Image (cartoon, one colour):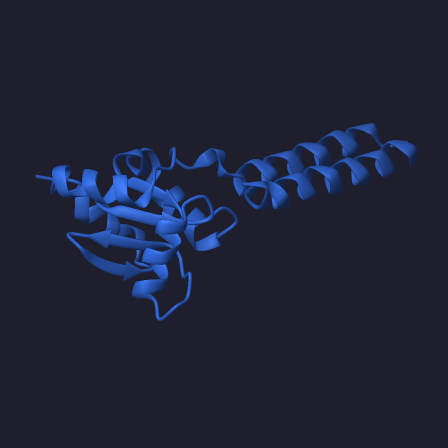
Length: 146
């Protein structure tokens, strides 16, 4: 759990240090802007922007019922972040599994990626897809536009 928050905490601490240096140099406006930038980066790097994670077994059970894809991800992964951002509000329709919080999820990812924990791994109709294009993922669960 703590490892998911390491990068965001590091960004906040570094931002605070840089902002303190700017204040000591007499640049309070620059200090505020830099601190805000570091806090925003910390927010993006945190698990907060992802939908609530569930366990791999529960995600697979729900996916079997409703047909929605399962996304295996981990905090700090830039490809996971890209997928999350490109899906927008629709990301909440998928079942998200944080492999750092769920050992069964990590094992499922390793099983389909030659022993590597490569994420995002998206499972659609029982078939895994490693780091798929976000547009393709969107097509898998949204009805076609008429």
